[in-house]
Image 1 (tube, rainbow, N blue to C red):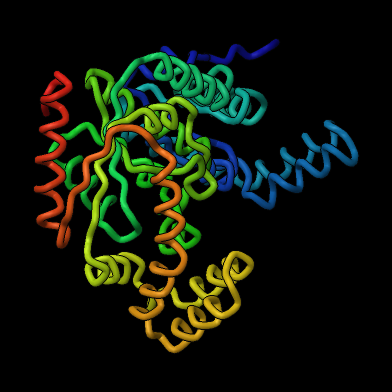
Image 2 (cartoon, helix red, strand yellow; image 1 turned 180 degrees about the horizontal axis):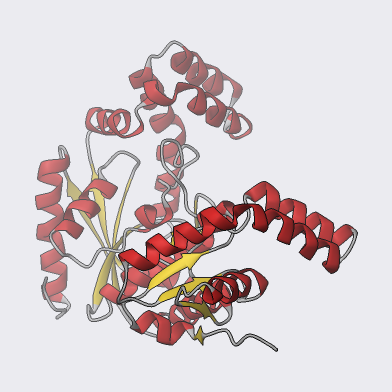
Amino acid sequence: MQVSIPTISITDALKEDAIFIDVRSPGEYEEFHIPNAISVPLFSNEERAQVGTTYKQIGQGKAIELGVQIFSKKLPEYYQTFKNIANDNKHKNIIVYCWRGGMRSGTVVSFLGTLKLPLIQLVGGIRSYRKLVQAELEYFSTIEKQYIVLEGNTGTHKTDILEALQKENYPVLDLEGLAGHRGSTFGGIGLQPKSQKEFERDLVLRLRELQDSPYCIIEAESKRVGRIILPDFILKGKDAGVRIHIHSPIESRIKAICDTYQFENYHDEFIHAIEILKKRMKPNLYNQITESFNNRQYELFVKLILEEYYDPKYTFAADQYETPVRFVQIQGLEDGIEIVKTELNSIVKGMGLLTT
């Protein structure tokens, strides 16, 4: 007699105050998961690899046997984990998912269901959620929105200003924050860069929050932010947007970069990243940069790499745009926030957009 497994679609699941349980491996969960889902893996990363190898080399039957052997040893602990979750969430549906809504989540729901744990399987697994995210991105690409773009050389507090504006409920789309990356060769050091799937998930969540705003504020980014590829509609919005170009004294920029990157704490990681730049620099400049960094002369290192490498690149990129631009001069973060707010409010008022 075939056991009937209770199921739910992703659209219905998201309407409920439910608990999502991700039974995929920790690595799969880390790459991408439904927001606030709890990781209760059926297999570890190594065990999943073993089962996958067995499937490819021997066949499905042996892979299932291996999976059962691994899972059977974990049953008492696994049952207790789910029982605790159920007891802590007595009035919420507990929705279990794997990659495609197949054997892993089905096994958990059917087996623990016989032990009176009220679990529901997500139809289509996390792939159904991924498709929903992609569909929403497609929808948001059709919505016309004015973009206001903060640009300026490295160290001009663009990201810090955006973060401050967002705290004041300005419609900021912090692309670097969503990507977990600062956008340069050194941008991932000290952070946890996100996968493309994670980025698109969080981007959709933020776009929902900004849906009613006729404009949004972004930083001038290239197509890639670390390993993240930005959607075309955001790049087109940026290219057509009104720009605020921030200037700041070199001393202020050097301090801002040293404060942000904390070179002393990540010295070895930066050494490796600097090596990546070797083929893009003239030998004499590369030698000066590496020597200053190895000697922990961090301010000299930043001054060299800004004036001789990054500034010329950013100037060239900015010169490619023909859209309206407003130039502002700031001395540091505090006055920068106020100056940029003044320009923003002027732009918004002048374009007849809603104010924040």
